Amino acid sequence: MSKKVLLFLGQGFEAYEASVFTDIFGWSCLPGFAPVGMVTTGLRSTIHCCWNLIVTPEMPFEQVNVNDFDALAIPGGFGERGFYEDAYNERFLNLIRQFDAKEKPIAAVCVAALPVGKSGVLKGRKATTWDLSEGFRRQQLAEFGAIVQDKQLVVDKNIITSTGPATATDVSFKLLEMLTNTENVIEVKKNMRFILD
Image (tube, rainbow, N blue to C red):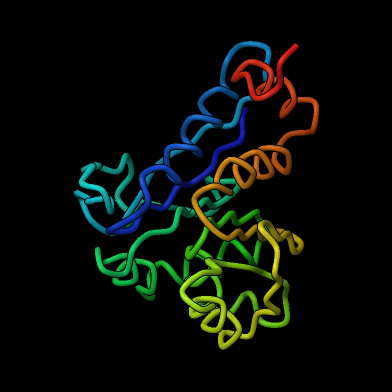
C-alpha cells in the first residue's frame, strides 16, 4: 500500500508552493516509482489562493484522520489574503500537534513554518522561514521558541522548513526522500528533467 500525504491549503495560499507538492508527488505515482499519494484539505469548501486561483479541497477538514496519512505538507501564503486566519486556526494547530506526536514528517514552505511554530512543536528546535521584510517573520518564529537558522532549508527530525517559494521544490523532494528513499527521488528528478542524462 502506497504512502499518502495530506496537503493543507489555507486561504491565500501560494499556488506555486502547493503545485510543486502536487506535481512531484504526482510524478512519484508513475509505474516503476515508489508511489506517494496526496490528498488536499482545508478549513473552507472553496479556497482562494493569493493570485486568484480558486480551489476545492478533496477532503473536508472534519473527515481528516491523522492515522490515514504519513505526512503533512503546508504551502505558505499571504496574510493580506487571509492566510493566517486559517493557518492559526486552533483546529489546524491541533492537527500539526497530532502529526508531530506521531513523529510523522511535516513539510512547511516559507511562512508555513509560522503555524508549525505557533502550535508549539518547534520549541527548542531548529527552523527557518521567510527572511526578507527586515526579518519580521523570523522574529515571529523565534518568539514561538524556534532556534532560527539563516538557511534556505532546515530539517530538524521530522520537520522541514524553508525560506520562500523558490525552496518549494527542495522541500517537496526532501519530503519524498523521507517517505521513500534517495533512489526514488533520483528517478523522479530524472523523469521530470531536473537531472539530465
